[in-house]
Length: 120
Image (spheres, rainbow, N blue to C red):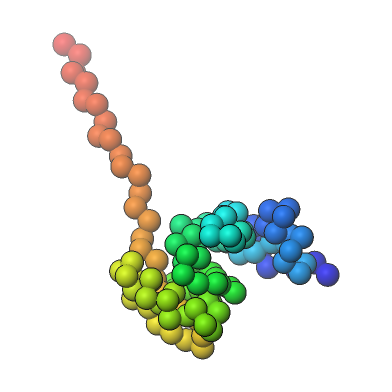
């Protein structure tokens, strides 16, 4: 069975291991860290790499009505919440998931246009 939840495909490796899931709602990036690997929402990639040092995650999402969330395993939810809090995120626990708002992405620095001397 093929499951398509959105426009953004998983990598070929993850398509083989995700029970038929082939695409999702957010752009994906494949990450490897701490003996784990998976396609994750691009906006959560750096955070997931950090989280995997203290917890196992069963699910995660970059944007759920303005909130991001991770679902750690029951035995690793406390260290995951501690890490997110240590990173300055306000965390809410809801039904085994940790919800938080991602900091806004900073736009790239824009250099001022070079002024040119008026023609004489």
